[in-house]
Image 1 (tube, protein in one colour):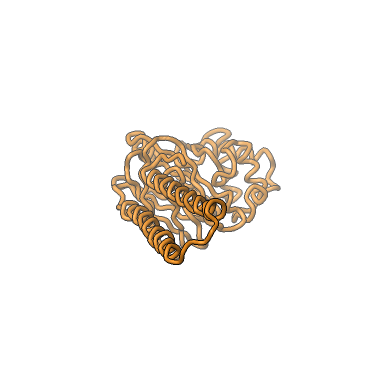
Image 2 (cartoon, helix red, strand yellow):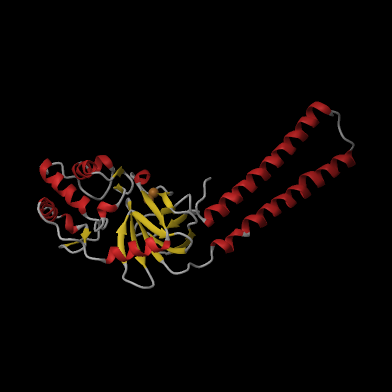
Amino acid sequence: MDPAGREARDVADLFWVMLIGAGVVWTIVLGVAVYATRVKTDAHEEHVGKRLIFWGGVVFPVVVLAALLVYGLRLMPELRQPGEGLRIDVAGEQFWWRVRYRPQNGPEVVTANEIRMPVGERVEFALTSPHVIHAFWIPTLGGKVDMIPGRENRLVLEAEKPGTYRGVCAEFCGASHALMAFDVVVMEKPAFDAWLAAQAAPLPTATGDLARGRDLFLQNGCGACHAVAGIEARGEVGPNLSRFGARKTLGAGALPNTAENVVRFIAETDKVKPRVTMPSYPALPRDDLTAIAAYLGSLK
Ligand code: CUA
């Protein structure tokens, strides 16, 4: 109801037209019903009744519904126009989002659970899923599109206002379906370009306490599932954590991204996100968890 993108505005306008149309029809039907039962209760002559059925029961609904249908269908070609340059591949995982930027110039960037896009540009999303159906939905920017195993669906979105918006999974996909959200950060074009270029730059090497966190991360095998650029962590099963510290939430919108919450997420993953693939690590010493959380928080 508060659109910040072209497609969402079109959908909101459609909603209001349909709502007002439905309201007018509802009022007329109720008015006629009250008139027939309270005001003029005696029977009509047969030819008057037939005429009423023909005009009120056939012609009127056909004209009104056809007009609303044409208005609604008019939007479809507009919503199908191709994107302009930036393409973002998004895959729905259980229960998180794999995100890959494919800029026309410059290297690909892989991230997770957060999408950034420039304002005023038609960005094309290629939506897939490896195992179950999810639905990709950023309500303030546009309509929802299913992510279906074995096919690639396209969605083009043009953000009109910079800001941070919430994206969600809109198709039941398992126990943690309701904990499958993502942040959408819409930025001015130069800021976005600078951000994307910075993602491809190498991460600074961890030193001191942070180095201890990095070593614990590797020793505990986190790198088998998670990738972090520049170290021996290349797993692709779980979310890429290269710039984890810059994200606002963790666990795909499950918790705010604070060190305390990272400790909690690692120690009791299944309590925070039921049925998630990642195992819990309740036996890890508190000290080690804190060090790992500090290291992950430093990855920006
Ligand atoms: Cu993914 Cu619901």
